[in-house]
Length: 113
Length: 449
Image (cartoon, rainbow over all chains, first blue to last red; front, side, top):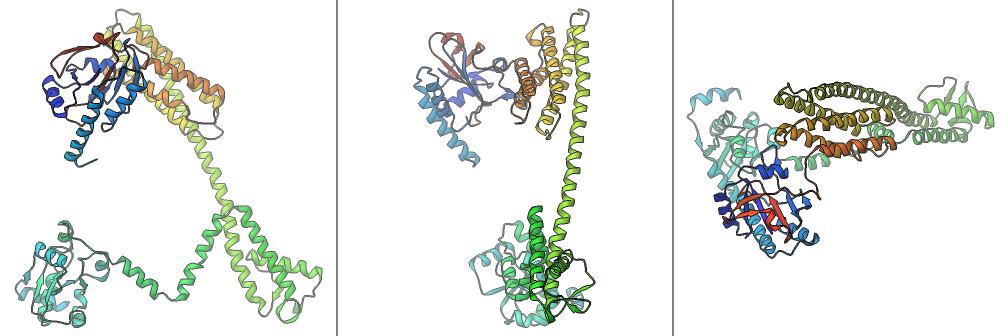
């Protein structure tokens, strides 16, 4: 199961999920407690940093990816999940496509690749 | 020029042209109008509107007829900016000289560039022109200038330089000696030197003295050999001064490395002093730890501040290790880092004083994370460390890492129960024993990922 997570409210994240059409539930850690427990809060902003946690079926952390690139993200997750032997996740390919689509949109808006 | 000042007042403002029209005409390559830059030649070369000609207002009266041969042609004059009056002077002058269709671009270069007009520089043509005009002698001089020779000489190593210098002296010795008797050889007291071994030694001494650019009174070269002496003096001057400056430079490097060493020891001493203060502070706080009368809030504040200072000192020590000089006293560094290790253990104990996890404030967490990060940086800072220093560093690193509560692979993932964008509640525990979970944190919705 893949979850995205941010500190945004369910309303905003629902809109975001529809916009990206990524098919992955976005968890809404409105209080920030879970982000704090995972230690992903970027002190300077303060917002979560782009960090991905791969958690195995026993609830242990298998791998932490702290160098997440917004553009190649979907692909990275797919590769990592395969390498770690986590159960194959059909939605990931959708996530990859959505991520690519999103990065295209973002670069179209910002004018940067 | 003098007359133009009064003319400006007497004649009404000339017809102007605006940026848009001018750009259109410039881009179309309109040849029906001629663009005149009335600034000095240097300013014209530094930047101008493409296709303009240069006619400084000072030279206008004399050169207008040459540069602008057709008085009935449309002429646009411009200068540096709207505050520059030269264009206006020029347009008045030109009309007085019989040019009928003079227009003024009042914005000038400043307006042209500000609005995104293309400007052209004369650099390339100027340099090419110079190269063509330079006489061959000047070119040869720039190619074989003494400054260039000296720069080449200072790039060589000291033994090579000395070898070349000595070789030159020997070669000239042979030349002086072999040139032999009579008119073109060396003379001593008016008598030519005979060709024997003693005279070879004399010629050698003369050659060395010449290569050192110092005279050698009693022996004199005669005839064409004087030219050879001059040549050897010139070569010797360059080589010998390069050798001398090399030796002085080495001395300078010695002084510099000494300065580095003193600075390094200075910084080491400062970190050591500060660290001892932090250690005594830590000991003081840990005594208060069991003291129940002290409010938890104050204890927390003390721990926070001491962790912050500790992180600062560790930062300084890390930089010290990175800028470690050669032949640094590794024992001093080792002692310093042993102190850090002791401090870290104390700090870890102190954190136990804080009864609840919530007591760890943001700033304390931040300090601990910094300490963990700096600890990680300690590894591999220098390749030439003694094994015992490495061991100490390794210990500090481990202690640093254990201080931070940062998650690492193998740790139990913190549980969560959060509302998802699909409106359902998602719990980590729901997936236990069934499937793995990937949790992807991102900063904010609609931010690209």
